Image (cartoon, rainbow, N blue to C red; front, side, top):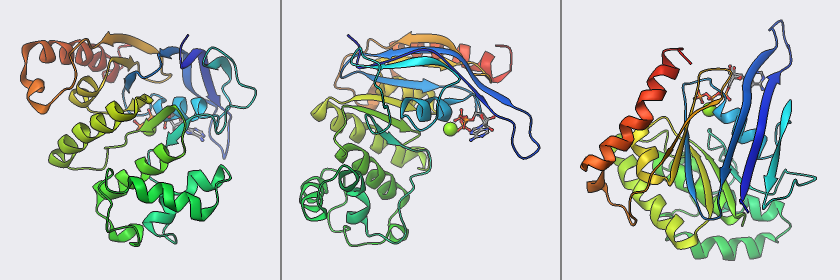
Length: 258
Ligand SMILES: Nc1ncnc2c1ncn2[C@@H]1O[C@H](COP(=O)(O)OP(=O)(O)OP(=O)(O)O)[C@@H](O)[C@H]1O
Ligand SMILES: [Mg+2]
């Protein structure tokens, strides 16, 4: 039984504001086993964020179904954790009160939510910054705060939309090792969107490559590299071969060939 399964998802956004209807996704199927780390890469605008919003229950698909633990939930919204592409930290809440939002929405009192959040601050590199406003955090800290908020909401399946996207290359390398450590400790099921092929291969058990819009799954690349993984792995021949297996279909998709 899969933790998350999508079958035949399609999405056409209705015409609005003088724009024609737009087909963002066409017949997307994918699956994540419990505890798997899976990445999604594809050209800009191919519908990756749309797909995550459908899986999070925020956008209704035009066709297709989503299963969680083998069942089709009546209401999908709130069943999985979701970190949007824009971190959406609230400027008027401190870091601590931002990361507790998911818990508070789930009905946990603010006092209890703060206790749970405080216990995780060190692991997410935010200790000492809990009373800072989001604007006083670095880009990496903002993203760790958004990740902590997503983790704290307590769901087994997490959808992360370019969680390391706003970071410089060096910080990204540190953050992806850190993200693997956090994942290995908790064994959540993760679906992560990224533009970075090396990052996708480094993190994942499997990489889905999407075509240009309307997005479809163009290739599926299994990544059987041993874990735990460290940065040195990225120069190993077997790693580079897997990167190529992702890059080739991605290049075709970016060129609009598929
Ligand atoms: N709410 C919306 N209404 C209408 N069209 C939308 C809406 N959201 C997204 N789109 C369109 O759907 C297509 C896919 O957008 P989406 O944001 O899902 O792509 P993406 O793969 O996440 O892109 P990127 O890699 O740049 O983040 C785009 O053409 C976009 O303009
Ligand atoms: Mg996107």
